[in-house]
Image (cartoon, rainbow, N blue to C red):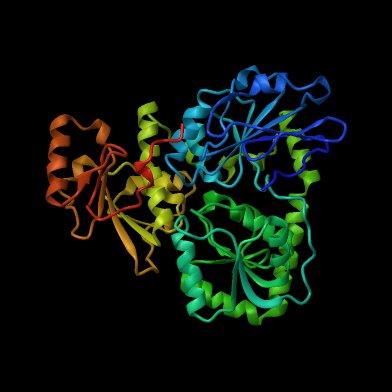
Length: 469
């Protein structure tokens, strides 16, 4: 997917682009090494004087296919555009480690603002949230007579098990459904012509398909995310798009909106106007200029929608990376399974519970833990986030336990994983006792992070791979 044309004189450097020039000899693109760090400052200095950039935008994601180095030596302003920290191997640990060694002038996060509090706690503030940064400058007016079917265009396969289940559920319910893969421009025409575009994120992220569908004039039916993901701060359910939660709700809303044409068209028009107003290339360039002039809008600050970094912090670097590791493991299981239920013991670390509150299919069950409710209220997490009932028959069970609760809170018979929230504070005798207790429940320690014990049944094994960095 090509980056948006932010300038007529934009030079693209990427492992996915060839070395190319125009008819006048100006460089159009440069091929970069894949998964190998290179000297970006040296590359920029090697460019002809006429092509020295005014601004350097560096896309970073958890795959680390592209690994720039020597950022501090770049004389031009640099923007790190951070994405894809919601999947792959140790995405947040890898990204935090990289950003703590390189120096960028500005940090932006696009479709995972719920992760910004980790960067703030690592001392990388300020970080700003500018959604839709990779949206192409393609605008199509809503279709007056779309085809009466649901369309999905995107990836499937083993990386998207929950999405696959939802698509299968639509087919079994006899919903008229087209599942396609297509280049971006072709996909936009399909969004425009279909009565409904179905969207389900990879892992609770406010993904680009939301913006693409609305920019293309399509009616969007997308999953309900947690407030920290930022979707609610830009779009209103029932006004610009429509949310669903679970397969039964998805099927019911597909049937409803396929037969309610006027209401569907009204929502599609409102969503299109909303995206066109807020996310045109002209507006995004204006946003860049404000950022470079050190005049960011208040709405760009992730703490407007997520107060977690304001009300609690890490005790030290080890504490930060331990909590990140726990979150990453739960996040990966959230990607792989329809529902995860986590039982919280009375004295479990409330920060870890608030960390995981941004995962929409994670059921958090509190066992008389007032500290969680108090911290959540301060962080802007509503009490209704906890003790939800599952709508899925396929639930995996976890317990988050404090060491002092081990004797009073039994490991439940259906528990498939145990996390000790204060493992780093336990002495060797306590750790040995916990090991023995978990072993008696057929739970064994994992090599992913200390204090995590799993049963012999397979969990998602992405974490067996080392960090990309």
